[in-house]
Length: 410
Ligand code: GMT
Image 1: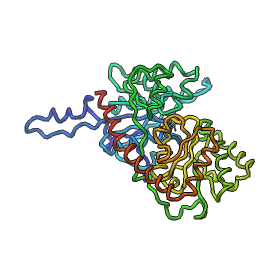
Image 2: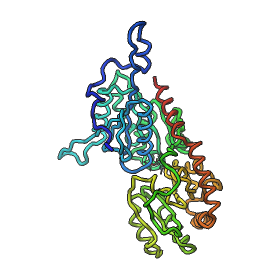
Image 3: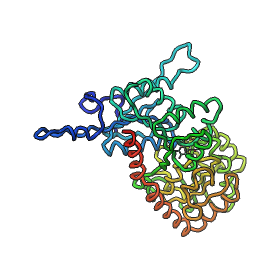
């Protein structure tokens, strides 16, 4: 598979010509007897974090889905988004690389990003720039739009989570986060919880539309892939995947597993990497379960790993949505999670999984054991989870809602 094209013009190497106009204008201009011109492709810039993480996944899957619906999509980022692994026509990648200079204590990478946004928006006649994660992308987009005046570039900001709940509220960033969110033409949030939190914390008065994270149920399917095995068939698998940051409550994952392991043969599969990983390895050793905990590091084939789990565990102290929980549900894996943030909007307690207070270790243990010792219940909940993933969080529906947001900017 070939990667997305890097900073290249569309097929034929030609730069799109002619004045900017909304799609459909070509149709109206076509007079009697003259050949109809194809409607102009809608052109969208997407900026996101490229490393492992839900916001980058949502941004990438959205861009790919839009390209399949005829949009020309330009990813503008510091590096190739990790899920942008397959070639798609209509998809371009533009790398924003900061120049270094001895005077800089740190290279001003956000200015390089802003410059790249302007360059791409002008060169490819972008209609809209959609940034994922407010910090600092909404500020870069605001600056890019100002630089392009009087030409109008629509800016959409999607709030994802810690941009609002953790980092955006740091005194060092509060005012710029608030200003740049308010300055966006349209604002979306990935859960009702996050919308409410953004309004309450930042006093955002502009409307925030909730557009949930989504999953493609054709990609995240139940059923183990041949040849992939993490444990013997009799051994139950508890799985966790995250960026191992403090909000993920990693010690609780290990504690819950150590308790579960006392009752039955099980393995804990830990996917991802981050600051809490070393502590987790130590705790597993302290609790004497290190041989049954597999740290797999970052993996980009979650659709192959998740179906291997019997239960997925996500005890976060804060979680705006929990995309990986939805991906697990799509793979028919019941989720045991915390009742924090937007997770209750995703997991239905007692139907598709169980929810507990983030520090309620015995609650998590009880629910995990209930599922691991009652296969019919586990299967029923798994099947319901997949149905909910398909019906409530369908990619088609969420992508259409983003398109309506772009349409409202015309
Ligand atoms: O906010 C973050 O910690 C980063 C971000 C990411 O890039 O993974 O995660 C957030 O965005 C995801 C996609 O919308 C959500 O599914 C996650 O729940 C959310 N993380 C948190 O709220 C901790």
